[in-house]
Image 1 (cartoon, chains in turn cyan, brown):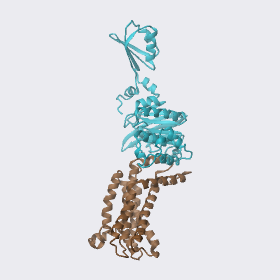
Image 2 (tube, helix red, strand yellow):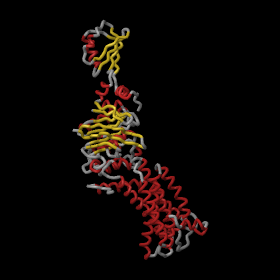
Image 3 (cartoon, rainbow over the protein chains, first blue to last red):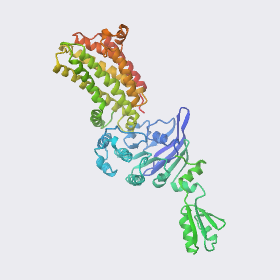
Image 4 (cartoon, rainbow over the protein chains, first blue to last red):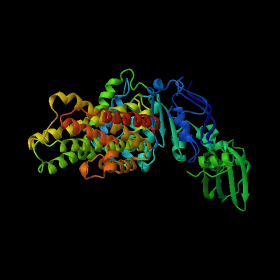
Length: 302
Length: 244
């Protein structure tokens, strides 16, 4: 069942359409990504959905509630981490969590959240003294302290180092596994590819595609490429017979195989079974970047 | 708009406690309390017994500093940092934070101003209003504070960020303090400016206080001027206040 339904969302700023007919729906229990370059309208779309902005047109239902008309009821069941929201410099970590917990009828135990998000040792630190990563983890903890059914997380891992990003992804998966639907705004392709069950790709205020990350990459056409130089004779039929393979082409002694899904494993497996020795094996995996370029005709510039 | 629902009064209590701690950690609050006290002590030594000018002057400085400097800077900073917007996403409304802040800052003004008569009593025998005028004194204090806070709210509404709110507050404070006669005795000021000063909120406030200290009830015109500023600035702030 869809926990979020958005259709025909329009939002204009001074006559310019930031959102121009955005539609998507999110089933319960998904990590749903909203991906796009800066200025694509991601944040606006999510803020309208979370009831922080009023859309000019369109229909939004979150948990069956209208974010404008039922704003007060909705705010009890959602958690939000905003991109440009800070806390007072002098508030202590525990004070912020304790305060935000008091806003909700059945909050989570904030001490548990503190430990879960690696902030237990920073309990008495002031917000102004936290590192970028600590601040980000505190914001996520604040978004979850009300025990929400839906969490909106905007640019979740901005300011985190690579290890902290991976740790955060693991925690977000745990949040979903705990039954919280997560809407994740991101301009990081790897993050979306790694974390999201499904993705809406936004460009210039429009949804250009909604699919799983794998579906988007495969749908972009061309698929992945495997290139190698055979050292022993190779019959192309060995490869074209594989369901993952789309085409095999030769350029001198160089062979290029294009295909979908896990074409690399299929090709290397077939070569091994056919006792074909190869050199200079290269695998070019298509990424969401390629999918974005294919969808919009432009390269993705965050 | 109601600011709470369901179980929320407990959260308003907690918000008040946290905001009070934050206010106490803010150096600006310390200065707003200490500067009037400092002026009082410096000038207190040359005071003639029964003086009815210094205490009203420092009281007005205290209320002016909180209203024109602390109120706008705090609120504009809260908006600039997205704190009001973040609260808008919770069951608590940002209006609650605004209300709690104004009450706490009023408390700070009361605390700061309360210290002044105590300090005076300890230092020397400067006059205080006679007991019959105490209700008037409370009314004048509240009216003056509300008028200054309302102007502070307008600054918070129009300022782009905390720093510019601070700048506007300071820029506005000095001419208002001068016109009110807080910087120079009234008889040394050009007559036109001294008269114009009576129509400023801080001027009406300090005149009312001086009347009280001289043993008279405040003049209705001065009360009316403060009420008018409170109403007009309050309305302007309510119309123009931005939450983000």
